Length: 164
Image (tube, rainbow, N blue to C red; front, top):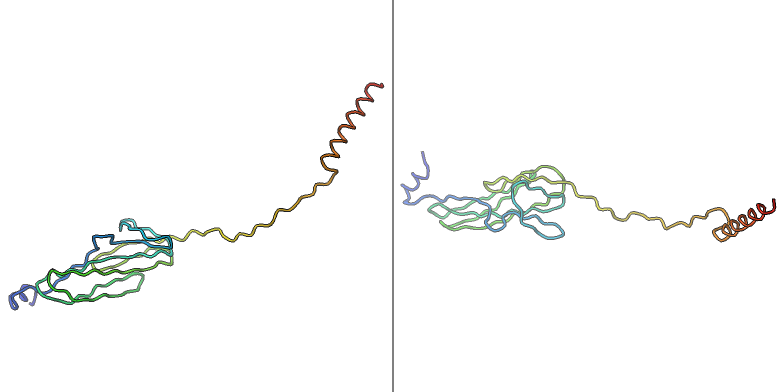
């Protein structure tokens, strides 16, 4: 059976072999209209409308030059980056996906799986119609007239009390 040992025996060197790993420098970021933030892959929760970017490094750990294909899959959408690397060389790739709907998702990037929870957007309260203030008219004579009536009543009652 043909394997890497048989290849090395036949050609004098190991065949090309590739590793796919999350990049060391900010492998995951989340972006929205407010900017971009580096995040951890553990318990990753974002809000609908945000974009997740995954940075991966491909390295040829084999003994010969070779071609690779790096798959990226999320929400039944897939894309593949391909390239050619000499032994001991590496290349970086970046994939981005915007999550518009709430739910649970898995990003498959190379050999890594990243689980993401997407929460609904908070509904901003905007454009709420505000009615202008309405002057409420209270039936009656108003404060000055009420004061005059009270004073008149007190004086009248006071006069009736002295007479009798």
